[in-house]
Amino acid sequence: MPKHRFYLSPQDWNPDHFELLGDEAHHCRDVMRCGVGDIISVFDGQGREVEAMITAAEKKAVTLELKSEIPTAPLPAKITLGQAIPKGKNMELIIQKATELGVAKIVPLTTTNTVVRLDEKEKSKKQEKWQRVAIEACKQCGQNWLPEVAKPQSVENYIKETTNEWKIVAAIDSSSRTLKEIIADRQTVPDAVSLLIGPEGDFTSSEVEKAVETGFQPMSLGPIILRSETAAIYTVSVFAYEMMNR
Image 1: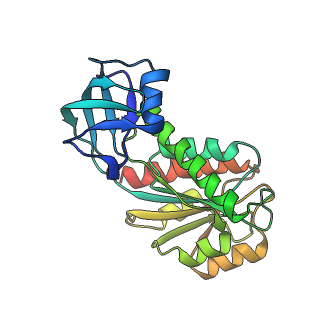
Image 2 (image 1 turned 90 degrees about the vertical axis):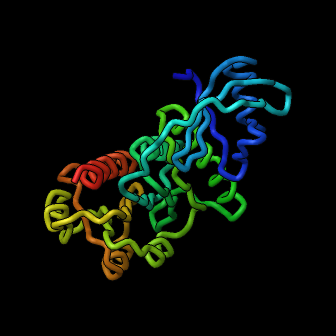
């Protein structure tokens, strides 16, 4: 098994002219010190992974010769995580762990109680940075399915645009039910779920009401108030287990 893994986007995947470019070429050649003759793994984030031998390691590109393809089963369930953007670097932690757990899409959200505020230019920069965090997480954990990290948007937009049959919102609300109760209600688990996790300070009652009106089920995470990143990792873990093991 090759020691090092690198990402090559689907649009750059060309078996007739196979090479790493840009950041991945730099990481392969200059950071990991891979050279001609080394065998590495390359994945495209869409379930495709191959073993390849380095045939040239130039300044701008690392040229590869494909050796074998490693089959990767598709994700058994599609989990979309709508996550209110927390302070500091906690969003990076959430993206990293959600990627490891097999989330298909991550949507960073601004809410009434979100401390972080971004203009359009900052949203694009954050999206690019956070997508890179997901790529690095895939490289490290062996995940061959790269989640899409969406451009930050408002929680109202996420609520309005969500179409999955199963929709859950974590909420400190008298109407909230436990994860166990919500999951037990369903005879069969659908193959797609949208989760909605709030910021420090939780969602406002108005935000929860809007979510419930569009079909989100309010969910309690127990009597202890969890940090936003803990709530996200816990909720994704439970739903990943339930959806992938029924």
